[in-house]
Image (tube, rainbow, N blue to C red; front, side, top):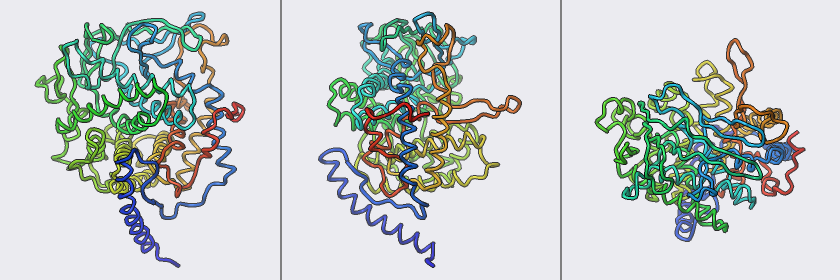
Length: 539
């Protein structure tokens, strides 16, 4: 019998050798264009058995069948909003949170939620988290399939990324156009989309407010949209997703032929590069703007009330004294995006298992696990896109240990309930496929479990088309659900994939970095042919 430890050493050594050879190839690719393949071999030790091809095909048909059944990208176009082109202003759209829909006869109005406490700046705090994921899968899907609905959605969302920065331009004399807001709240208007009457009502957020994590105020003379309300202090929550998806945007800029989509994504990518450069140049602090358009660093503004806690959300360096290099995946990804190289951010194969900062962050607020995993994915994706094969390999090694540790964590040690934790892990694993991560059989089956449950649950949701005559007048949640309460006494919930994460299988099939040495979970020949998708496959 082979010695297991010796096998691991041999495989690791071979992987390093292959990666070194691949590094030269990837440098050549970087000089002539973006890479078209994973520049090294990366094989897992004991990945398990391959899935039966019939099982993979059945799983794939379930996913694309659901997209066809609910007209997934048409649906996203219908429920997303920002500013419509019919207004004569620069158009854009994003995926809104803290909002609901109100149906009256043949018109659906999307309303930003009312908050009784107007001293705070509540609502819409993590729009780019969700928007980035949907944008990435729409772009990947379009580059894979040529589907027009995906192209138009991606165009609007690329414009939404740009609007998140251009909306925080104070007036025509403000030359800083690349600092990202939490959200931009423009004017109310009505229009028609896909033959449906639609209105947007932002009125509930037209007020000044402040808290430890943001301020809201009015810019009366924004050059693009006139009077806008700005919620400032873009936190690093969303930046983790934006950096990952920026790599996909870069491919779209270079490779798509759709002129409107190419232009929208080129503008977004330029802004994101400037945004990343600004963070790097300010020692990895995220700047924002104040009420009169003045730039400042949250946590360093000199206003004790506003600075209380703000440094944590705006800085990648705040805890370096206690936890050196603790957010290196993030700082290296930012350096790649801004300057095309990792600069002095030496992360090695960091995986978080011995990172006290990560453990404290997750135990303090479970949502931080998404940030940490996404920063790690962003580092690998940006490294691959920028031709740094050696660092991408180190990042993948760390990612293997990160996910392995997550899978092996005892239930009584999890920061949240097991079902929520495993659903989120499954969603992250599907995203990881697009950066060259090779799934094991155990991981693949975990992903399948939660995606199949999603299809089953979404089959019962009756509000995919709020304009349909079968939907009565009233107030509705317009986003497809990702959970439901199954025990009223304990509050226990059954979880499935959130709608913004569902399309990650499109990224996985399109990606030039998908790894053929992992357990294959998708039949990408089916995915790349939307004309063949049968709604009945979802049943």
